[in-house]
Image: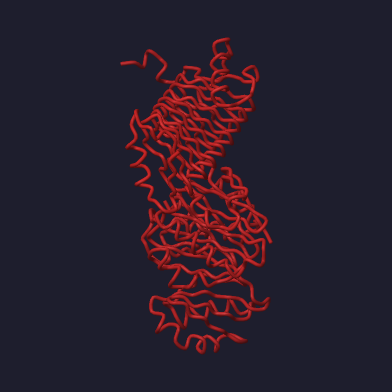
Length: 298
Length: 225
């Protein structure tokens, strides 16, 4: 199964409540995916600062002195915010790649959840309500965000198997469904030098989109071609720095409901996830069409 | 009128209460408040009661209905009125995928649009949709009537048997072994009755009829045992 929620705010005055609204939506989708949960949240504090969200199974060891150790490898300041098993490293945008490479050396057990200007990804194994409270998601503000509750079918229940997946800078993907050609596609992408970490089908979907974009496609074009190259069931929700998109496979058996008002665009696997949003009674509520790419941008 | 508020009461208790009504009940009118997209609302009813749901529902509302009239004053999630035997289900808004699937009887009215797989494997149910329907609707339909006042999506009536499919608007594509059929006076009569029952003012003459071309494997006598 799996549950997806997404919220894109048009009304800036609601940004402080983004985390709280997304948390409520995410917890409603618990019975679609009680194995693990994750959230991608976009908030931009400064143009010159980039963010790396990292995860460790032993945060006490790995995150201690991380700031000082990493500082030796980059130019400029680093701020570190530790949230349970995750830490957000804020550093100059032009140092992100260098920092990422340095991390591999100085903290090999630390995994990068996301990289970009405004994206932070938090995901762990456990009930959505526990995952949300461990990272204090409800306290977070932002312009848009995507959440996922996972019921694993294609690979093990692990942190790295949880969604969202970071696809490219400030891009992320969540998935409801299962891809049937992920093994052959993984082999093909790996031959082309694409790094794929797990045996998870969605990671292949995410890597596919990244690969398409690295080869000149826009996100919209990458999503269009996913309809041709990916076999299986999917409802994808993708996040970018300034917007979010939705695409469903042509069979469209994985559910999706959208709602739009003057204040927001919201996505839910079910209408239940949307019922607490302000003004939902008067929102335009509809089901996204199969094999159609939808996109909203700031 | 009996009122049940799902924001304070449980879904299980609501359905048990509705199931406890029999043919001689004098509590014939029920109103359900705050459905908030919950699953299986008013499922498995078997008495001549009228249930009004004030809002939108989630999966499988009014499933397996017999005798009862269920009116959803919002939109319905996947599988609404699935396997209906008799009675009537009216949705004021839109219906999600596989509305009225496998229904044996009764009438399903969708005043908005219905999405994919509407009436899949229908076995005698009548379905009236005021708007349009999505792809793979009436797939393997076996009997009953489907009336669509708007358009039909891809692969309408794929592998259907004997159901009558009436569409007023365009059909994106017909499924395997589905073809346009002649509209005879008896069909116009059936159509008029269904349109009236479905509270729709469209004219029967504006519709085209589709049905099985009877050329697939199971229609060939040489394939019989």
